[in-house]
Image: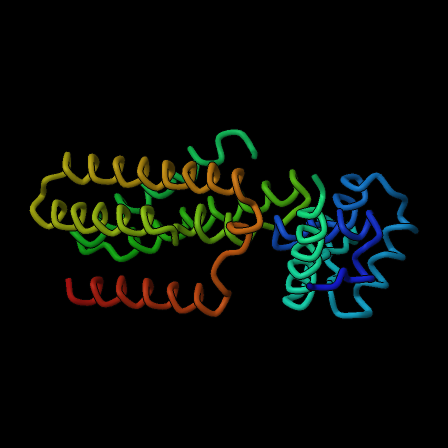
Length: 95
Length: 152
């Protein structure tokens, strides 16, 4: 049976990665508002997921405003798929 | 989704088809170039609006809806453009207008269809073609138009 991915178990990280599968990239502020977390909490999760190669950040400037764009890497997509498959296998055992 | 986004893309495509066909029919290369610029401007503005409004970038939206790489959009565009060019060479200007309008409408409808699919299954449809593939298609389109313009 596939194992749960310890890096994606935290609800905020799972929600973040799930949100990123639906887009090519999301702005930092959009991710923060969608998840309902603070800048520092999101930054902490982003840093951890970026360190293991699950997502990447890109700096940009929009009308003079500095923005950060976040996107999943192919490795991150594979990891999320494997994690979701493991979750589904676990849930199958529940009546 | 910015209001009138699909409509403006459809109108820009209709204008681009008409200007290309008329430009080739009258041997006015500047009109062909202007047609491409009209579409490039409309596409750029709408993509920027979409990105700013939603705070996300959707590769699938950019390529399938705006650049028309969806099968229905690319096929109907090719047929409409060919019909409009054929009509322009024969001075059938009403047919140029009709082909352009139908091409633009089909392009916009194809975009609506992609959006419906995306809403049902975002993860499958979020990503579009690679930048390299889009650049290759763009180069082929420009090359084809240049050859047509030179041969007239």
